[in-house]
Every structure is written in structure tokens, then in C-alpha cells.
Amino acid sequence: MKLFVSFLLALLTATAAVSVRAEKADSQKPTNIEADQMAYDDVKQINTFTGNVILTRGTLIMRANKLIVTQDPAGYQHATLLAPQGGLATFRQKRDGPGDQWVEGQAERIEYDGRAELVKLFSKAKMRRLEGTRPTDEVEGEFISYDSRAEFFSVNNTANGSSKPGGGRIKAVIQPRTEAKPGEQKDKQ
Image (cartoon, rainbow, N blue to C red; front, side, top):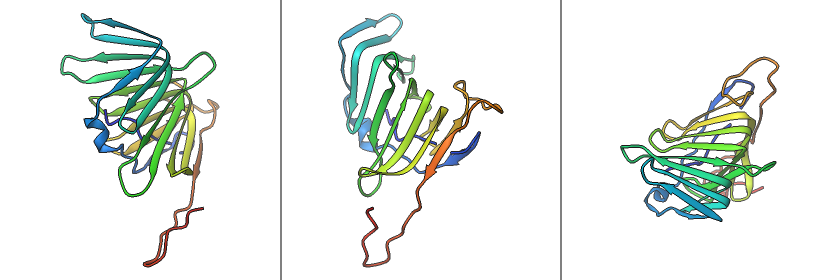
């Protein structure tokens, strides 16, 4: 579950390519889920967790009011996280690469397709990349799709993944990159 990861974000109906890869070691870690209640349908391969759900897998932490996990015949998992009334489902995960790099996101609904390694955030979607606690890039819109294999995300102004004139605006904040010169330390503002 190379998840979220790091996930996403740019201008009205714009797309952007961003290097945001999940911590590879997380895929080899066990998935731990805490919740107030769980129901499992073995025939349909559907596991439903409700009430203050917290999923952890390595550096990945996801929080929601409800988590529905299904497994297809090939063994791939698909997850849907639903926010509490008036709240947002969230995730945070360390990114592969040097330094203290993280990605975090939130939305009313988050869907993850384990086969395609695709994350979709629906309604009030927001993602940001961080170096330690300092945000480097941030995007928000009604819909964000992140393909972790291709390292590609897109942001749209409607919750169904399309964009339409007058459908709202997306927002992006892209911080300037500073390159450290040999012998110097990178700026840590």
C-alpha cells in the first residue's frame, strides 16, 4: 500500500508533475487499524471500520470516521475513507528520498486503489508536501487525483473530477527551491 502518499496539487484544470513518492519500506509493514467498531463480510471481502478510525502502516497514518476496505480476486486492496460530519479524512506519510520529507492530505472522502496505486481526494481536497514542518508546495480544489507510479497529480474544480467554467477555483502555492552550493547547508527557513 504505497499509498498516499504523498499526494498532489496546481491551477484551474491544470495538472502538474511532482516527485512525491511514498516511503517504499511502508509497503512491507503490517497495516494496523484502530476503530470503535468493525464489521467483516468474508463472502464479499468487505471490511468496514467505524468511529475514530486510525490506520497506520509504517510512516503512513490515516484518520477518518469510516474506513471501507475491499479486496479484489487478485488480492489488491481498495480503501475508502469517509470524514465525520463536517470534518475531513486525513493522511500523512514520509516520502522516499533524502531528508525529512512528508506529504499530507485531507478531504471529505479519500479513495485508494492498491492495484493502480492511485489516490483520489473528493470535496474540500487539499494536499501539501513538507520538508520537516515547513510546507514546500500546497494545492487545493474540489478533486485531486494522484498516480504514485507516474508521480503525477491533477487538481480539478468539481468533486466529480471534471472541470467546468464557474465551477470554483483551485489554488496552488509553490515555494521557490533553493539549491545549496558545495560546502553550504540548504536554507532551512
